[in-house]
Amino acid sequence: MAKKKWSGRFEKGLDPLALDFTQSVEFDKKLYYYDILGSMAHARGLARAGILSKKEAKKIAGGLHAVVRDIQSGKFQFKEELEDVHRNIESALIKKIGRVGGKLHTGRSRNDQVALDFRLYCRDRLEELHDSLVGLERATLKKAKETVDILMPGYTHLQRAQPIRFAHHLLAYIEMWERDRTRILEVFRRINISPLGSGALAGTAFPVDREGVARDLGFTEVSHNSLDAVSDRDFAIEIASLSSLLMMHLSRLAEEWILWSTTEFNFIHLPDSFCTGSSMMPQKKNPDILELIRGKTGRVYGHLISLLTVMKSLPLAYNKDMQEDKEAVFDLFETVINCIDILAAMMPKVQPNRTALQRAVSDSFLLATDLADWLVKKGVDFRSSHEIVSKVVLFSLQKKKELHELSLADFRRFSKTFNQEVYQILKPEISVNLRRTTGGTARQTVLKEIKRLEERLP
Ligand code: ARG
Image (tube, rainbow, N blue to C red; front, side, top):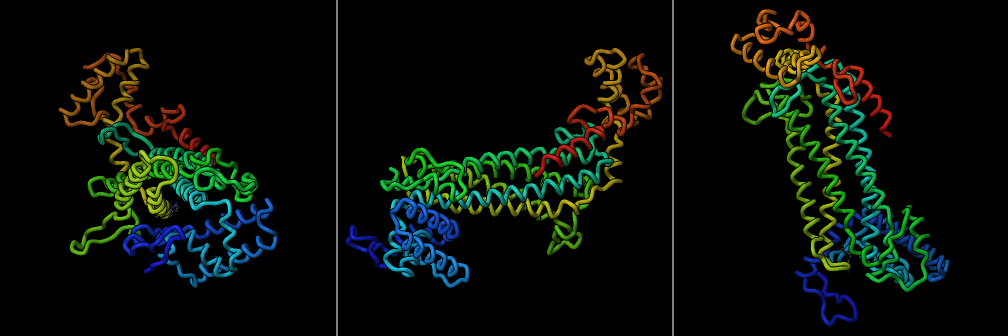
């Protein structure tokens, strides 16, 4: 434990308890790569501005390279007494190349440094998240193509409502994920702004070319207010928010698949390789993966609330509270990317149970709406036709018959408009294919959407 003083300003070293409480190196060492990337660009910027000589800049770059090598080979020892990743790396650099290493921090504060590192980190992870999501969407599109001819009951209120295509249901999720993907791309644009040069809070007195350094790091813009730049964590909150929405979508699919894989539904067969057994009940096959996806949604929402709360009412500019941002965001990315990847791996192996789905979709009451629509096409107003068909339904329930098992005379007790033609429409295949407008369940419509989505994906 260090007794080392912070600087000449301090008469005493930090209490070990205080040191342990404030240090962040334990988790922010994850940022080492971005810290060094940022430092290299900063050193090049200082050299271009004539603040560092070419020789000094070269020495610093060489030293930073050596530090990366040490870290990547496992030789580097992060020290708690050096508080965070930034001071650990700077101190290692000075140890390697001497006092010239101390020039690196010219015109920079850890406040703009951490904002920079964190943005660089988020930029890369967002790209990974984006690519994972595209992978899941592709796997789902493939499944939709394979299952386009399988029908199933669609539900509202978890009650059987109307026939739909299994593939149409899958495409509903791709729509949600496409909105998630758009959000990722939007947040990426707002992250891709360089805060470097904002100093501790008031900018820098050294004539560095902020725009040049930003370009060097692949940023599209520089921040325009030093106070905001060091105290902005909107991007972390936006990541948590888009992740929460994304997890909410995954949790709905997870829940549906859990339900559909029960003996009661038996709509799908989950792959053994993504299920577990019970330690006591030999017959059990549990959908643990899906349950965990559902469960981890809570954890992601938790991060959103904690980030919002950390930032609430914080006076400008940097406050140490903000150090709490990192663990949340690290865990967010890991959790969400894991959930997406495992779902994508599972997708090709989830098998719809054609027999059970066929049986379920043959429930003729799913076609009550089609019957009412048919009457409307024959000139009956919709309110009356709704009333007529609800009476027909009640009648067949009382007679314990399916709609197509009623005789024409039975139908005609409720409306003289009924004729032999009704038997033609009382088929689920007819019902789904009648819905041809964009977004509907007709075979051609669904195939068209599959194609549109395929073309949309990068
Ligand atoms: N470890 C700190 C953080 O993550 C770095 C910035 C420290 N700045 C400061 N003024 N103490 O927020």
